[in-house]
Amino acid sequence: MRRGVGIRLSISLVAVLVSIIYLMPTFISKLPSWWTSFLPDQKIHLGLDLQGGTHLILDVKVEKAIANNLERLKGEITNLLRERGIAGASLERVQSTELQIKVPSDRAEGVRGLLKGDFANLTVLKTETNAGSTNFFFDVIKRGDAFAARLCCRSIDGNDS
Image 1 (cartoon, rainbow, N blue to C red):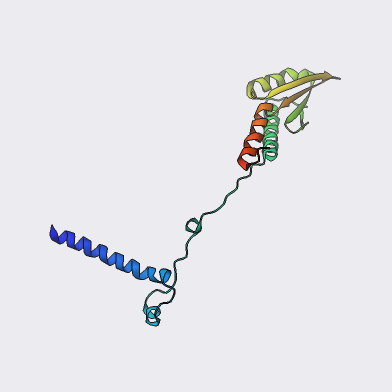
Image 2: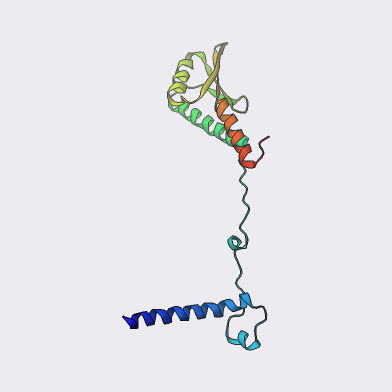
């Protein structure tokens, strides 16, 4: 039992002495000339975390995120219209968060069902029917959600104005 404690103590002591020898150049700027011939002579270089860390700023570009969401949704709707066989439909961006679907009037019910069934989270703002075509105007993001996203990003930036 005493032998095991003595071995552990001597191993720990050797590890501490080797550590002190390797740390000497970091703490003492002028080392003797004989030191550099066979012992380490370079200081330990601290990484960013030990030098004081980093300053990371995250910037959310809300308008860009909304535009990307709008384009993704536009592609999904176009593909779904194509899969369901609803021809003659065109999609275009009307405002920053609004899309317009223009379809022939005889296919309007199919589009209405598609919007209610597969895209229930979209807010249909208005529907116009004129000259054999029907226009659906809908909001990709509810107004409250867009406002909340902008407000959240302003508070993250520290710009609460």
